[in-house]
Length: 332
Image (cartoon, rainbow, N blue to C red; front, side):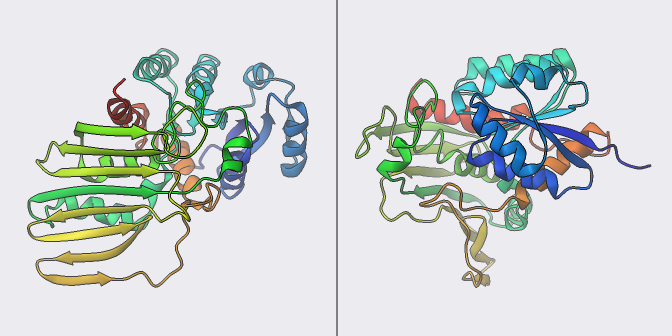
């Protein structure tokens, strides 16, 4: 049976929209048909770049029956309502991170998926990395024995110009947070995905350098359901910026991930991996320094789920886990 091709529209034509457009273009079972943006010029330029239709408004995109799914690439503070509007219009949704800025809006999104019988996936593309999947399997196999420490380090750099480049970055209303809710949420998602749920024992958040409303430095101590302890360090003022690192340390072995690659793997006293030979692609000092291939894998999973051929791997519940932990870190 041939797989149904899903027609996609993109809302929000900023930097991240390019990754979605390229991902859609790489798939034989997907087609980009149009885009919309609150800036008519930006929408027109994006539509011309990818030879698709420019919608005069989001409402016109949602009223187009040929559009099956919408990729939402707007500022974070608009994510929840944009998703609800698309779901109410009968569209499936690909929602950029974070899925919402608080738990109340998350519940509104979940309710809309159920009421409209539509699927929504929250972009957590790093879960589709080969090494991430390998570590997940090793944890599930208890290959590391009793896990003692699960740590996440995200010492990134964002320039003053980065925050000055738009009127929403670094604001509470539209960004919801800084080093964690925006820049570090993928790392938090991976930590919870690999190590399981955790509660916050204590945390300290501060604005150490940038002239913004949200934190650019954060440290938290966690306790995981598996009994492990851990820390999360996040920053956007660590010059020149360092790759994300996750450490899972156990009584029978340990693993260190740098970005989404295994840097060191030791099981039962045997070192299986020691070092990374390939060049890392990471967003330590440039949020656009990534590839679209993992986005494509996640979109392909959504398409398979829509066609009833596979399970949706990152649904609303999975997409909400990082947001809820970050809320706890913020003390909200």
